[in-house]
Length: 230
Image 1 (tube, rainbow, N blue to C red):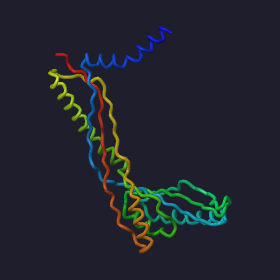
Image 2 (cartoon, helix red, strand yellow):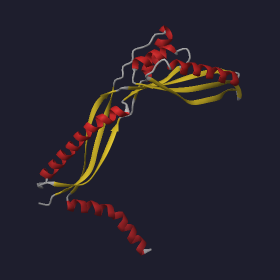
Image 3 (tube, one colour):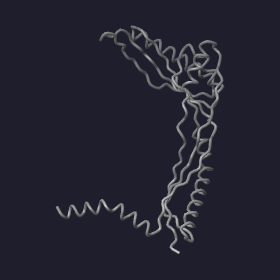
Image 4 (cartoon, helix red, strand yellow):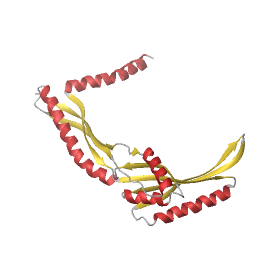
């Protein structure tokens, strides 16, 4: 038991020992970041074709017919990509017994042309409901922005490292390790706007205006430096 306890004690103290060793070697952990608001250039819309009734086979046929009409209509909008996603058939219970059925089909639409999406949704408003809409920065645009932000983040890291070396009266520093975290915030959902648009389309049958807004793209650089001893 004694060797085991000694080993456990050494193991528990090892992080403190490492930290103390880093202090003696002049190793400092730091990070720096750069961010930028970027206009959203992509819109993702999720639609749902849904029917309720007593005959699930009849409901399935109706949902399939409406879905086919939606997919046929989207062919007139060259900038919109569409695909079907989840399909669901579920019973509706009342007093412990099945009283009816609900059949639904989800579709996902993506485009960089907001006007086309607005017009398309107006055209198929009698066939499908809007489940969700979200504006986001496309992957291609985000990567372009990240390249500039990476340069800024590295410059900020070097400035911070130089400042730390100067404040500790060291002549400079050596880079020990470095990692890069390129990340941009999750797309902002626009459920309220989607609901307003649904109501507008249903009452007027005309496309509603869509504004993309922006998201923040950020890059963070993390690493360790070793301060010069002199």
